[in-house]
Image (tube, rainbow, N blue to C red; front, top):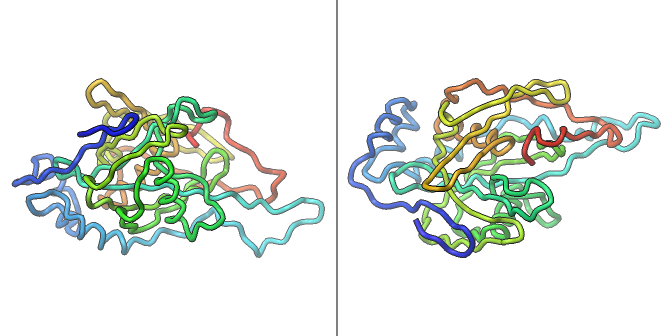
Length: 281
């Protein structure tokens, strides 16, 4: 652990001679392909993980606008949601486990102040693709050099409460020691990391069953504590991390996860947002 700039709390990888007991148990529960990636004295085999994740193909997005739909007379313009991307940046921790980088948003922001988020943001003109958006925003927010990150796959799309189509992009940070965080204090108060596997466990988790746009869904809250620090990871961020962990570990979470696919409005004047406080972002 080391600190740079404003609040920086990252667990760094250290060589180990034997696989930690918790990872040995985890390996026994994984399918053969994923279990092989935990072989060896250094925990997760990152190269094998990269190769496997590059084979992942997310399903078609239910939130892409259709150019085949013709505007109805008097209905107004077709609704085309804005797009955003977040970086699910994974690295090998001190115990050989996979960890993911998170931020705590600045307390001075007008929306979602002080909440936990993945680095990322809205797409801008000039971004080549979703990975470019996620990397650009990560550099702006936490000073992460895109050259340090190996992009491996996008994940299934999510819909935010403000009707942003959010694309999670998985990236591997092979050398955590080379990452020298530089926080944009206007946007980020802290940077920290958590074990990715925690989002598959029914521990330190609560949930609410809600409904939005006629669809029921589960809103998850995870609590992570380290020393005197306590973080609540919830809403859209929690949902993305549950899905990312399921893809990486090739298994479903130990708890029910009702993830709805919402129907976007066809026309701009029908656009709505979720009531405040229901879902992050």
